[in-house]
Each structure stands twice: as C-alpha cells, then as structure tokens.
Image (cartoon, rainbow, N blue to C red):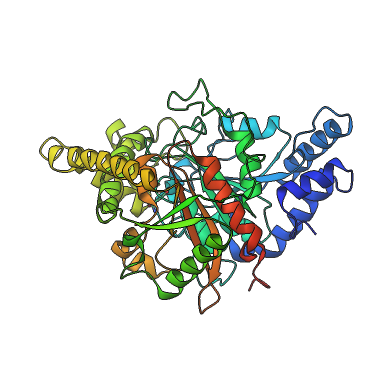
Length: 488
Ligand code: GLN
C-alpha cells in the first residue's frame, strides 16, 4: 500500500490513525528485502534502530506532541549526509566504519518534524559521478531496467523511491546529482537555491556548489520536505534566509497563468536524443494550454559549463578531501612504516580510481604555474554564467530544458567513456555554478520504456515558482505516478 502513496498522503493517514509509523517501517523493510538484493540502493539499513525510532515517534504522535505534515513518514538519507551514530561513508573505503557523533542540520530538522530516518543510500564515491557505479558497495541498478544505471551520484536515493523501497529521500547535488538520477529513474528531484538548505553535516565535495535537496514521488512531497529542511543555520555561514510568508507546500497553487517559460535553443540541438526532445516539447505545449507563455531564449554559455564545472569542482574537492589522511577517520593502511607512508598508503588504498583522478586534476588546476590558466579562468567563466542567467530571467520566469540529453545508459558503458559521462552533465551543472534552483520532473518515456525527465530552472530564491511550475504540470500529467513493474 505505501508503494502507491506519497509522503504527504501517508502523513495524513498517520494523523487520521489509519496507518502507524510502526506498520510503515515494517512494510518498507519488506519492500527493501524483496528488491534491494538487486537494486542495491541502500548502504545501511539498521532495522532494529528504525523500529525503535518509529515506536518512539508514534508515541509522540499519539499523545499529540508531534503533528507536522510529515510526522511518522520514513525518509532515506544519502550516505554523504551525517546521521548521528549511524554509518556515513560516502560509499568510500576510506570512510569505512565511520559513524558521525552528530546529525547534519537537515537530518536534525527531519527528526524534529517527526520523520523517521530509515537507511543510508548508495551513491557514487564522494558524490563524484553520474551513474552510481563507483560506490565501494557496488553499482546501483535502475529499477526500470536493471541493466541500466540509475544515474548519479544520488542513484540510491532515486532508485529507492522508484522501486518503492523508500517513500522519499534526501540527496545532494553538486552538478546534477539529485536532478539527473531523478530523471533516469522517473521520480521527482529538487535542488534548491544555494544556501537555502544548510550544508552542515554534508560531507563536502565542492562546497561552493553542493546543496542538499529532496527526491520524492511528486512535487508536493518535495515542497513538504523543503518546508522542514530549509532555513538559515548558524553552523553554515553560506546558508541564507529566503523568507516568505507562505510555506513551500501552500505556495503550490498550480496557477501558471501568464508565466513565461524560457526555452533555450542551445538545449535542443545535436547530441540530445530525439525521444527526449520530443517529450520536453510536448510537456511545454501542455503547460502552454493551461495559460503559460513560451519564449525561445539563448544560453550561449552552456557550451562552457562542463569544463568550468569540472575545474572548479575538482579544485574544491582536492582541498576538501585532504582531511582524509588515514589518521582522523575511517580506514587506515597497514602497509606503512612512517607517518608520510601512512598518509600516502591510506589515501592510495582508501580512495577509488575516480576520486584519486579528481584529486589529481584539482591539485593540478590549483598549482602555481596553472592557477591562472585554469582555476582563475573558470572563476571568470562562472561569473559569466551567473550574469547570463540574470539576463535570461529578465525575459522569462522559469526555464525548461531536458535534465539530461539522454535516458539512462547501460551499466559499464559510461566507465569506458568518461568524457561522454562528463558531457552528459551539460544541462545540470550551470544551475550549481550560478547557485540556482532546479527541479526534475518525469515527462515521458523513450522507445525502450526508460523514463525521461524535464528540468525546470528558476532565478535565485525563486524556488517556489519552480516548484509551482512542476506542480502545475503534475496536475495535468501522470508520468510521475508510473512505477516500474517487477524488478528482475
Ligand atoms: N556528475 C557530476 C560529477 O561527477 C555531478 C555530481 C554531483 O552533483 N554530486 O561531478
């Protein structure tokens, strides 16, 4: 039964005493046991602890102490977001056995709202990837076709929702890691404006780009989760208060009358699958019918977005990941006779190949002879992207384009052609470079019955407009309600 309901609907049933948090986690666990030996969405699921938490939450609901919209609803957490006393490993050998002594602010807020943290979710190692194949726990499979990848890096977060093994999840998005797996798995994923959600407790990949956000069954669930996790936090100096008198959930009116949708010509050219193009174009026509206006716009900077992103992201990663030295956390190599040796061996053995490659690349672009040629140039390009979007939003309220140029590729194919994989981030990375909100909603299927996602982007702080556009579309479409058949 919980497979068919959204988080908000489940919350209502709990309030009406038609469902209990205790039954829910049992049902969820059964779905997980049925599917996860194949899907591999979870890195850790401590059922005893989850049962205990569910019982404690249900007690508080029964005595009226907890009555928020999502009280009693279970939520899975990506394995790079710290959960107190529970393994948090970034799907990396180097963090093997690491249990943080604190909760990330977003997790703390979920718990305060009475949500039940139910399991940690598989991902690309340190969130570096677009396919969820680089995890030390093995690749995640796409529930629509288990020969295909679920996208990445929040592949576990999206696959778990698609497979019914999670009601909703928290992911992180540095260059598309919430939106692209949501698109590949036929679920809804939202990356908020930079600073809207505290990053405290999110293990950093590229701090100026990272943002936590929800993956869920529909836009309403994403909005309800945003109501819980958003807000300024004294523990994250980059967090901001984008105050509004209406909650995210209440701002979903479904009215888009007169709103102008910008359609960037650059996102519909060569290199985008025909099925993807067609689905997005049809979606835009449907939204036009309910009163929105459509305008062709230009985002000429898009072609520079991927190189800019990979310079800035790897530069920041090389610095952020220097803390993993085999001394402070997790894995320590046995093959060392001196302190230098210990650090070298622990890092060489603890990090996977993709992470090591990115640390090297980041160190290179920051090194004295090359800093100006690469890192500084990338920073200038980043500013041009910010300015370019600002100009675009003078002409339109939101932008709609494909989330990714294609649907989910076969497992293994991307690791053979990394450049192709990096280039597939073309439509998502700009939003991170400019700090803007982006939503991916299901909008069709390709000829092989794999889901297609449409991306809705907005200006900084316009998260509610972005979500409302997605909500308006979900009111007139049913792609977001479709689920894969039996998982094999
Ligand atoms: N695919 C991108 C990368 O590998 C984005 C990852 C992310 O958003 N965490 O860097």
